[in-house]
Length: 252
Image (tube, rainbow, N blue to C red; front, side, top):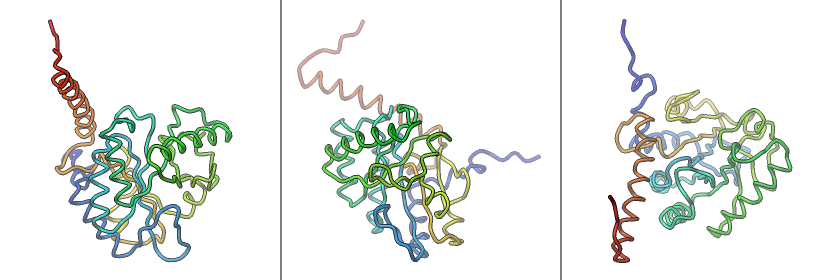
């Protein structure tokens, strides 16, 4: 009996930046890329969305590839991420680069952090997080997405809340085909097949930049590397600051 390796079952080789570029080329053959604030009623279009869960560094690399292809995507920033901090200078500058490349920014609202059982709670927290991002980056936010929504959050199906487009609205659920790489694999549909067959007029593609790397890796390797790299960078920052201020790093 043949045993299928996870690398084959979950198509690890799909998730490289070189293949990402190829997929964008396939998409452009049959679709126009649009943004959430510029939806079109006619023609075949793609909404390309990135939920930035782990890595702003990886997001910049995706953003550069897209800009090189003349594509505008939307990057949803998670204010409560354990993996990056938008107020760090390096992260702030990378997000500014993404914006400078022409991409949109959205709110990635943390369902676990907030109590979103009531519409008023949803709107209050959305207003606050939008104001943080808009003031920090001097931009206008048009859209939001939920982070790991439960059935309770998915009951919020209006197209807009506090004038922000809801990526989980009834319109997107019923009128727009959905394809995602959540957790580092194609959970429902293979994007290559979806784009090649081009059967759907409207597609919302949800990607997470951390899953797309230069070399073929497993999803677990990618997450562990992201965590370890951040820790090592913080260690080096501390060492550099000690040198800068002529102080010692005292150990036993």
